[in-house]
Length: 252
Image 1 (spheres, rainbow, N blue to C red):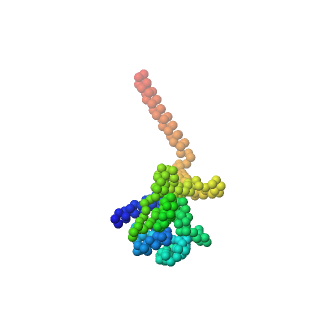
Image 2: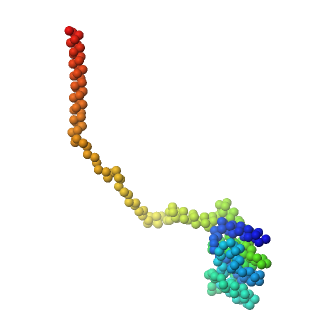
């Protein structure tokens, strides 16, 4: 049974890592009900949660959750001592504390941007959290910690992203970075304000070469033409003398 639970938890964690960009250390928001159940079932939260989630964790809570335990009194004194050991995250209800369930829902907003795991035994809180996509739920059954399966809202969100109806957070970040690289996100005024820097171009190496001087000076081609004409004339003269010699021999 323990191996089966571990496989199911590994499958759920990989689902949230791949589709909602969850990364270690996992941030876990705990309320008083979860701490009370852990105390009752003798569960060491700091030791068992990292083993169960197979990674580093950061255990945290809010001032509203601590205030709620103070109001409830001595019955939850042990849970209060456990909860006080964890980090206290800032919430928007410092001056006017609200219930832990209402505080947690406000911390998650609509898309759980901080990638919180929620550890609670409150049924009203879990029903509200299942409407928000990308919220892993932890609860205690008997003496074991259980990571709930992905909610229908999370599955529907992933399906919409795959069909192209929505764009995931990681895809939005990659698209915005590409826009910045291509300069598509800037306005016309920003584009005009930025002047392009001219690159320093090196001179053409062929233009730096020294011109070769022609041998013989400017009169060299004239001499060649004169010598060629003399040779042609001399050949014509030889041909004419031979013809004349033949004519002379025939007449004689």
